[in-house]
Amino acid sequence: MKQYLTLAALALMATAATAQIQGTLTIDLKNGSQEQHQVSDIDKLNFTDRDLLHVWKADGGHALYNVKQVEQLSFSPADHIDLGGRANCYIVPQAGRYSFAATHVDGTPVEGIARATWLWRERSEEPLIGDVSYQDGTVGFTAGHGRGNAVIAGLNAEGTVVWIWHIWLTERPAVMVYPGGAEFQDRNLGAVSAEPEDGRDTWGLTYQYGRNVPFYYIGDNQEYNPSEAFDQARKFTETNPELGLKWEFVGNDGYDGYDEAASMAHPMTHHLRTYRAGSLGGYHWASDAELMNLTWGNAEVAYKTNYDPCPKGYRVPAPAAFNDLKNLYWDESQGGSAQYGIPGFFVMGTEGKDQWWPMVCGRNYEDGCALYGGQAVAYPDRLFMWTSYADKYQPTPLTSTAYAPLRIIVQNDYGSGGLASYIPTPGTGSFSLPVRCVRDELDEEVAASAPAGVLSDVVLTLPDGSTAPLRTLIGKSPLTLVYFNNPDCAACTVLTARLGASSALREAQEAGRINVLSLYTDEDTQLWQRHVADYPASWQVARDAAQRILSEGLVDLSQTPSLYLVDAEGRIILSDTSMEAVLEQLR
Image 1: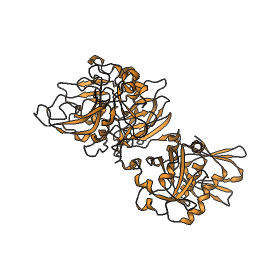
Image 2: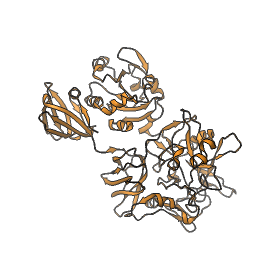
Image 3: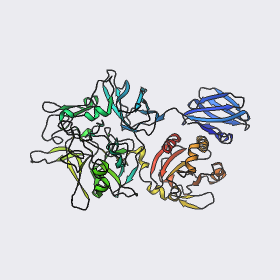
C-alpha cells in the first residue's frame, strides 16, 4: 500500500539511513515526470540549503532534486511480506505474496533443499497457495483469498521431501490467559474459526506425537472402517500430482517404522511400526525405541523443539498447562450437538468470553481410522489432546517400563452439575490427535510476547512534566504502538516521517483501534524537549526519566528505532517489529 509523504514530512528525512527499510521511493515532479528508487539501494538521504534533496546510492550514484519542484513523495513497501523463520507453521491472514527463511526452530538452516513446491492444500474456489519458490535459503509463495490449510515441501535434488511447512490461512488467533497462567490460542491448530456455530471450521488438524506434519481432520461420522481411512482428506484436499504422494496408512506386523528422514520423506503417511514392549507405549511410528530427540518438550518446562508444529511464538503445551481444563463445563444448551452439530466444552473465561474446545476425533494408531471421540458413536463425550511430554511409566500388567507420550482426555461427568473432568493419561505415539498451542515464554525472540509485567509499571515523564505509569498510557486503546526512538537518530527520523504519513495508521487511530506512544529512553532531556513538537499531535510522547528500561534491560533496545505492538493489558503482540507488520496486524 503506497504511503504519501508531505514535503513537511520529507523535511524530517535529513541524513537518513535507510538500510532497514524495504520498498520503493517514488518522487513525482511538478513537470509530470516520475522517478523511483529502491530503498535498499539508497545509502542515505540528506538536504543542503533546505531546498535540495540528495539521494545517495550505495553504489556511489547520486540524484538531486529541488524540493520546490517536487509534487509529492510516496513510499511503497516491498511487494511481499517476510514471515521471518524459525517455525514449522506460519499464519497467513490475507491474500498476498509471502516469504520465510527455510530454517529450523533453533535457527539452523534446513539442509539439502534444492527447490520447494506445495504438497497439499484444502480445496477452494481459488488455490489457497501457489507460485511456490525457493532461492538462497528463502521460500516464497502466493496466498489466495480463501481460508484453510496448506503444506509446502522442501525437496532435494532427487525430489525427496526433506522438510515441510504448514501454512495456516486464518486470522490471527486471539489468546486467552487462563487462571493458572497458561495462554492458549482460541482455536485448535489448523482451525479457521473459534466460534462453535462454525462447526468443522473449529476442528483443526491432527498430529502423530513428535511429528510436525499435519493430517487432515475427520468428521461427519466418517472413517470407522480401514477401507474408509483418509476419505475425508481425499474429498476436501488436493495433492500435488508431481510429487506422487498420497494420504495413506502404513504399518502393522513386520513393519519397522521410520527414522526422522524417512518420516519427513513421507509426510502424508500415517505410520505404525510393529509392537515393541517397553518403548513409547509399545506402538509408535518411529524406528528409534525411545525417540527422545523428537519429543516436543519435557514435564517441568516445555521447550520448543525443531519438530514442534506450532507457529512462531507458540508451542505444544506441557501437561501442567491443562490444569485449567478442570474449569471446563459441558452445557447441552450452549455446546451440545443439538445446537452446533458437534459436542464440545467451554472453558470458563477470564477475559469476558469463554473458549470453545470442540470434541474432534483423532486417528487411531492401528489403522489411521477415526479414534473414538467426539464423532464416534461409542464415546460421544470425550476430547483428546496432545501434551508436549513423553516419559516412562509402568504399563498394565507391570511387565516392563515403557515410554509413552502424555495425552489429555476430557470427558463429561454426567450428574456433576455440567462440569467436565480431565485425565492425563499415557498414550501411544502413533495416535494422531489435535494440538492447541500455548504462548512460548522461552522463545528469546518473542519473550516480550508474555505479559509485560514490570515494564507496565515503569513511570514515564510527559512533556508537561507530569508522570504516569506506562500501563495507564497503553490502556487507552485496544492496541498501542510503542515507538522507541531518539530524535537525533537518522533512521528514527525516517521512520517518524513514515509513521506520521501512514493513512492506515492514522485511520486506525481515529477509529480508536490503536494509540501511538513515542518513548525516549536516553538521558539528554533537553534534546528530547526540543523535538517534542516534531511528533504528530495525535501521538503520546513520553520519556523514561529514570532510565529503568535501559538499566534493567526490560526491552532489547540494542538497535533504534524499535517498534513494539502491545495490547491494553501490556502483553506485547509484536516485538522489535517493522512498520509493515504493524499495519498488517491492523488490517
